[in-house]
Length: 349
Image (tube, rainbow, N blue to C red; front, side, top):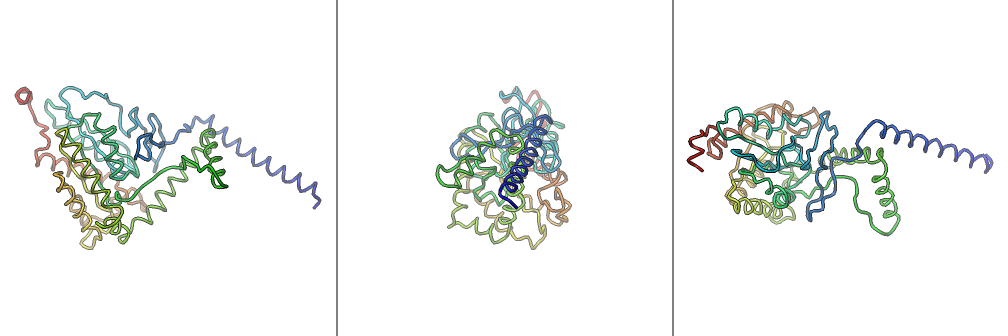
């Protein structure tokens, strides 16, 4: 092959690839696909990322809509309505509701249950959870944003992987030097200007983060190492729980630490019972209410509670069972009184 023919073929190949890429980009734009991902880097120190206000997308077949406050919840007024008891929920993908519709999440089911039997007081349960948040990031969010909603009760959903340091999303900062820096800068330029690149790269990275990285973490040995008192992660997590307790104590807000089990081997051979006890003891040390959900799910065939045969996030049935358990606990501990009457309300005032 002559040099001239090689150059011509190379130009044709590059032209074809360019045409295909432009066609894909054009289809994304005319198709009305919102290029904004669900996540964005956070400007708050210590908070790696946040959900993007007014964004939407599909995860696990469910449409996810983010409201004006950057939360996976319905729109609600910033100011707490009169005669309203407001509950704020924090957590990671379990509380966020990975793989289930918003109305199937345990926080929104709890809200529905409370208001079905409510008297004068109405209940509002805000889902401020974010996938891949750890306890440190939840405490930062509570301090910087969550307390502005003036909650009357905080529910913090804890999963034992919450000790790890988690990041989510394609790179948002690039080093200034070297070939790697040049490549990352090019990626950032594409991310800002290309609908197709932004849409596809976000989903590829999230797939890797959820299906590969989490599988590396979710093993008994790794999770036990993460909870070592002398290790790097657990002391930070325990300190964050203390921060949450202190923040809420200053505002006279009770805290319910809800400990979700890893949804595998839900029997007497479950490998993480000691870790749940460790987290529960930390919560009680900071005067938190503590509710462990393992006894609730013990004996149930685990895959009947999964969102899919290969994903152990809790499904709608698991969320429903959790909501019923939380409701019973809140009432038994007198953390709420859904039957309060108008007369009792006036007396309290």
